[in-house]
Image (cartoon, rainbow, N blue to C red):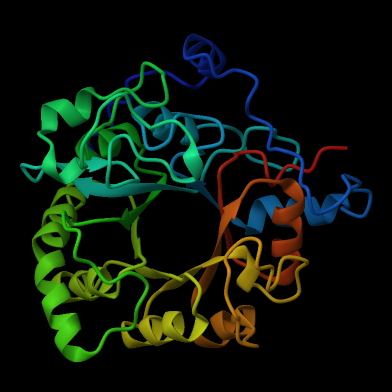
Length: 333
């Protein structure tokens, strides 16, 4: 049963909430570097199709606008308005990353370390240590990106999302540094990795089973998807592709995944295809849009930050966009 108890009232009150968090004015996606900003060739019918037919998935709760994976982010992402003329579109689904603390409490956090962040940026929180080696009180007291928001438990996040909004749980780490990332595994290795993931998977699925939201589990790790299928094969799953289309397709087909979550440079028919500036790889000549359509799977693409990226990917035939911004489907004249 859903226990949605939203901490803030966002309908009619979003602006005030964001102002108090120092986040007003950041809702517009950054201008793309890969094209000019003309959009005269996007007509009203295409805009309507983009907003009505494309699944908008809030990456870490629209991380380009809100402090990622926080209670504020998931609540704010749950509200907005429908239609092509709406600057702030509500999410159809909210994606959050799930890791355990030292005592096994599940929290929503992307990195292994509380102070980590790739690319030389500041640490994500004001605390140190690996999340899965740190007690829950320390983890959930850590403030995110200098805001008043702290690292929430998965239960808090689920309480904060209305039942009408779907939730994409990315199984990020079960509490181990001995994982096999983005690999199609041989039987012996898969068996060992299953044992690592199983307690975490069962704990996460038991928790979210108490809620009415539609759930999708995604992961880069084959054993994470395998243990979801082992425990409850009715839960939809998605394989997250990295830099090997063949490995991603092997895993997808092995577990009959409901969706494929792929980087934008894997989508043929777009200006981004095979762009090694995004994910460095030697991509095979496989049209994933056709594969998804032929096999009856959704094709969702990460991570989208501009209206231009969104438009070109929708034109190519993808089903969903995993986006840092709520406004990528609202092309502005």
